Image 1 (spheres, rainbow, N blue to C red):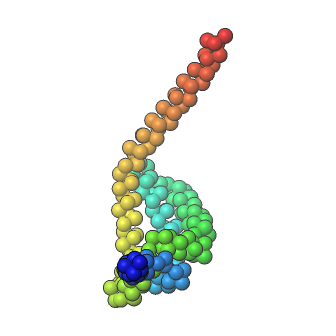
Image 2: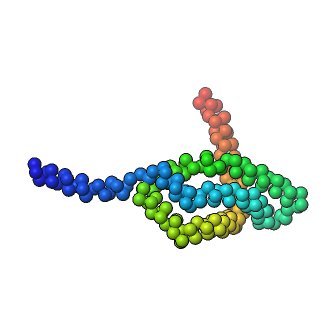
Image 3: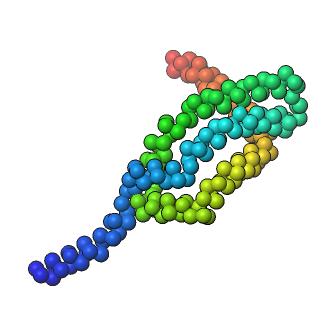
Length: 185
């Protein structure tokens, strides 16, 4: 019996650090991390740049298709880019996103992870990372947009083919359904 108690005590002692390391991050610590990383300010920057990003994207697609925009079309692009940016800014507020962000961090990081991230982002390198990340993200998005522009014509063709085949399949199905009752009578 004494050996069993000793083994149990040793097991609990050995597993206690593992349990402590796997502790779920607290809401307060995740909010501190989001504050240290200036997540709310980054969202504000993205929302502020959204009108310009959308306008540029629309114009790039038009250029890719070989059709330059007229002055009237440019005006429409700017008008709707602003409208879409306003809708996005209203729908993507920090107060709406923060609870979901906290949950994501809690689901994916332990308390020890969050503590380490907070410590990192308070260092000079961490602060530099925070400062440069918006530019890195913007440049990364531009790379992604350019890659998409290269495949837009092919995607457009595939979507046309998809629509054609889908309509044909529907017509074939309709014809089969019309013929079915007459063959069973």
